[in-house]
Each structure stands twice: as C-alpha cells, then as structure tokens.
Length: 198
Image 1: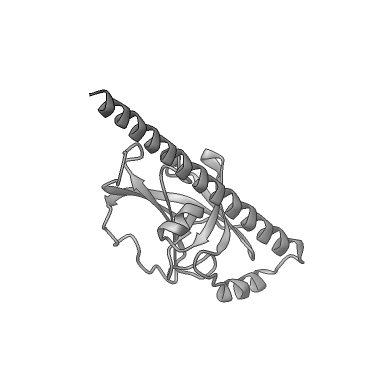
Image 2: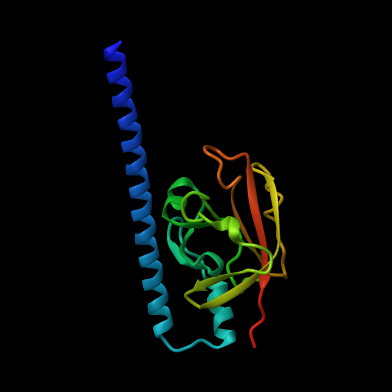
C-alpha cells in the first residue's frame, strides 16, 4: 500500500511538472512571436507612410508562410497584445493567434479568420462584447474592427468560415465554454466589421 501511495505521488508530481513545462514553453513561444511581430511592424512602419493605394497594393501581395508571424492583434477591452501567426495547427497556435489559411488579411476584401486557445492567448476573451473593438496591425497598416455580433457554435461547425467578398469581415474564434477543462465541445465566435477611418 505504501508503494502505491509513493507511485501516486510521483505520478502527480510528473503531471504537474509536465503541465508547468508546457505552460512555460508555450508562454516563451508566444513572447518570441510577439517580439518578432513587433520588430517586423517597427521596420515596416519606420519606412515612409503608405498612401491608401500603396496599402492596398501591399495587402494584395501579402502572403506569409505557414508558421510565420504576420502581425499583431490588439484587444483593447482586455488589454491584450497578441502575435498573429499564419496557420491554425497546434504548432502555430502555440506561438499565438492563428490566421486560418485561405482566408483574407485586412484590405483583401473578404473574410479574415483568427483563432486562438481560450486558456493561452485568448484568456479573458469572454469579456469582449458587441460594440468592443479589435485592432489588427499589419506591415502595411493598422485596421480597427467593431464587434457586431457573437454566437456559439459546435466545435465541428465550419459554417462560420465563409467568403464575404466584396465585404471585409473579421471573424475571431476560440473554444467554449471559457472555463471548460479539456477539449471544449463548442466555439465562441465574434464577428466584426471595419471601422471607417476619416
């Protein structure tokens, strides 16, 4: 009986240690991605300011590779500054907010889909409501989107990823319920539209 108790204690310590290691490595990967994204944006913005036509030209050719940093997502409501990474596989999402491959980027006049884990980059996202904003910083400009609606869908429901051309729409998704432990059965979806600048 004593041996069994020792084995349980060791197993528990290993699980806690593994969880801590996973949290640390994910946190470090996100910090590195954010640093790389900010550096990329700083270099791009240090150059001469682009005209609206130049921004559209840059946007039309913008196509980062799988796993590359693409920009920064600011979520003012929760004071979050998050790296955007191309792709949504496990490795990409460990680095930051994933851009769903095949969807648009700002100024490409179609649906932009960004996804992140509720327990890492999108912690506290439950506070983001209709009327709040997302700001997407790209090498070719800064773009603000206002949340128009939210909904909850099944985790396998891909109907939230649809072409919206010629209208630009930002769709942000994460696992739901927010406090769920394990593989969440649903997804929380924010739909936001561009805020016109003057």
